[in-house]
Length: 203
Length: 74
Image (cartoon, rainbow over all chains, first blue to last red):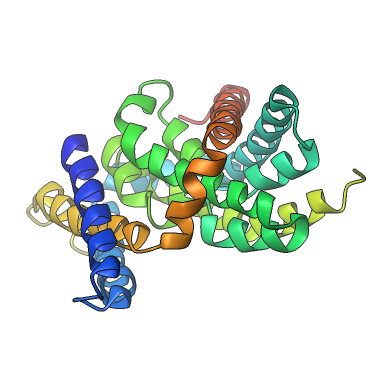
């Protein structure tokens, strides 16, 4: 399974690169917006159906209840803490490194926002850290799930509500759908605020 | 919809989702490959980004594990 995913990602990357460099034979936006969104919607629908059919997951969701909201906060705290430690080790501006990891994987937000708040140099870092987070989640989900059933949700961060949701549900089971989605959703809401809040810290 | 159909014969969802996932990941790769801004910023910040990322995910996983143990979520 995972090797097909990595292959698809790789081939997609190469085709996208060649396409944009050889005068866009296929309009880039068609694949990256239309095909992407259509397959994502279809997938969410199918996963929703699978979830509804699974009696155990519904019972489990009822048992877990509001505790589900603890996940995104643990992930947020862990990410910012990781940014702090990473920044200290690298000897760079820890405010920036914390802000960068507070993107929780949402690179289309973290990139532009860190450019605005910290300048172009940090923008590239914000982009890369969060982009690699998404990539790492997709590629390593089958290994990380062995650490903890919910570890891939932590890894995915904000992306666990859309792009990495399918692979997470595939490996962690249908009953993690709601946890993964709500964690990703909450983190997506938190990301802009946490980046902005960290940027306001004294430097 | 799935809830209403839950007592009916099980469909093999794995095959369906697998196919769609491949299409999804392919288009994700496609948009990354066509994003020259992103590709150009990768090498210049690579190592720092990897270090920050690894710490961020390690702490996230650790805290999730701790939370799970504290509040006992299956």
